[in-house]
Image (cartoon, rainbow, N blue to C red):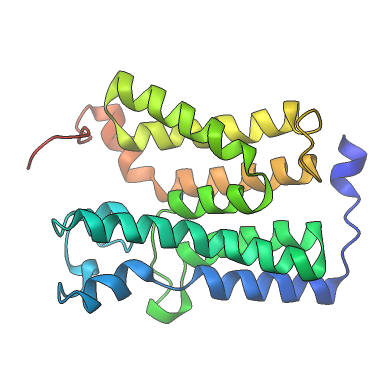
Length: 213
């Protein structure tokens, strides 16, 4: 496994192209675009100030939040699918990772983006789609038990790299060790972006699903 993890065959020009394409896809701020198009102003001026679906939901428009969630996921999937089709499996992994980075740090709006959960799921859909089922199952189980959306995402993102490392080959996931390593890095980055949520969870002040106010 470790030898496979270290033996990347991709050339630097292709890796750079995959990273650039992925970043450009990921940096499209759909939450901001959709809320402005709907006449709801700048989503960054409310709630957490993020451009993700959770903050869009604070506008009161559920359909717009759902559209943001879907588009933020699909921009990473699309980057991985397109790059993978033309440049290969390793390039798809790189494109998915940089789509995630682009969402977190979009160049168009001062590198201040979302927390990356939707784009994390979209990356999985693009390079290891069967793992989306596991992510959803873990998320739903934790959400049903605790009613904390943030905790559900954090636990699911912790489980995914471990499952990929242990089960990836058996499930027929191409380059599974590399996918596991990249998803682990994405998990760590997303944990850092969720540090405020983690602090509130530890303090018992995090909002629960369905809570008002």
